[in-house]
Length: 442
Image 1 (tube, rainbow, N blue to C red):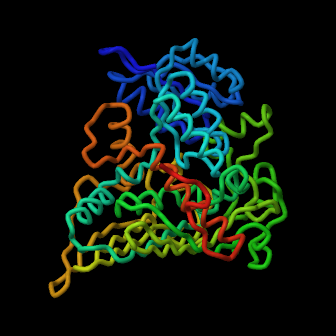
Image 2 (image 1 turned 120 degrees about the horizontal axis):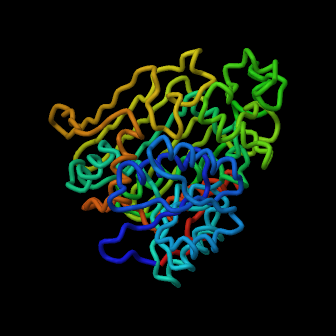
Image 3 (image 1 turned 90 degrees about the horizontal axis):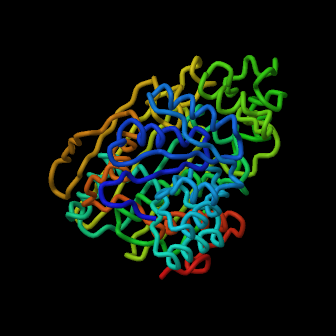
């Protein structure tokens, strides 16, 4: 369903956890002239009710709510044009395909899905219906990353030979993936899919290339039952009402965060989901230390490392070429203060605020036979994923022109996913994995 000229596009959200809030706020506060929010769908009524209460804080009336089992009925009754999918990753394909079949376009949180068969379902539905899927890779909209794209496209380092990419999640942010449903690889695909798909997409976009082969090694080194070996383990299942969690810097205290309390603690009676699980409890099936070597269609290679238990948070990217080297270094937090260790990053939801413990960003071009040149970038902020969230929603909801082609398609989502899936298979087999053996893209 496409909106008639002059009519605001009607949006519905499926999945009303913390990941939905940024999209909801952008729809009703920033882009109400071109888009409207018309419904929520979820498996948990309490979470939908929480979002409706927050809509009232923004001066917006509550919207109708539907159980996820009634998703297709909601699309028809509310005459939905665009579906925003912010549910648990493994369910994305279910809602994406149903929305496409109903004639809707889709914006889905990354990752697009969690495995190759689900990815194929989405790609087949896009081809069959002619509708559009956009994957919310907000890192493409970060001004620093946009500038990297421009410099590389303009030949600043010549032909690209290799990329080194290191990403560090500190012991506040990294720990959070081990408290919640992400700790189960069947639900999230692991950090190679859930988190690193952001980074793999950036490299695909920067190089204008596709992954060909991946060799990787990963393990659970710090979290899970390894925590006992390192001396961090405490004996409790979840932090709330557990005395053993009182002195644990890794414990999330839901009752101290009003929004988290509403979304999760107050909603537990409906589905039994515990948002504050012990990061060192048994049952973790994802890795926390991962190394990847990838080759691309252009001949370039990438070495990538993701650490989920670092003392500081940030990332380093180095691009080596025939005419020099480009270096990006971002420090999002220099350390984790003890007072903030048991909170979320910036005491916010989904990166809306920056961490409190300092940070900086530098972009440096190092040409051959010339002094290095610092590249100044306008528009970068430490809030909202480097300023990317607001810029992304301007494109998705506000109709802002997109000359850098930042809006990622289902094909782009598949390419980012495939690098992570190949890495996961390589973890298991100990051998290189050809991407084409997982999924063949047109």
